[in-house]
Length: 71
Image (tube, rainbow, N blue to C red):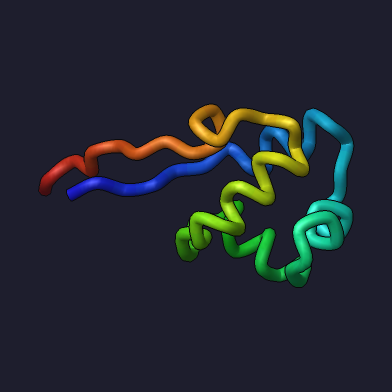
């Protein structure tokens, strides 16, 4: 099984941007950004592109698909 990981928090913090500021830029609630950073769910493709654009980061650098270890 594969899992989508993101580096939203890292890039947002590097730019000294709050969750609220990023949320305002992409048109979502602050709680949505928090949930994405905690990987509670995956964003839509449109939202992922908006976040990458707002952070000035290539989408492939912001999101990574990895294999989960089987137990």
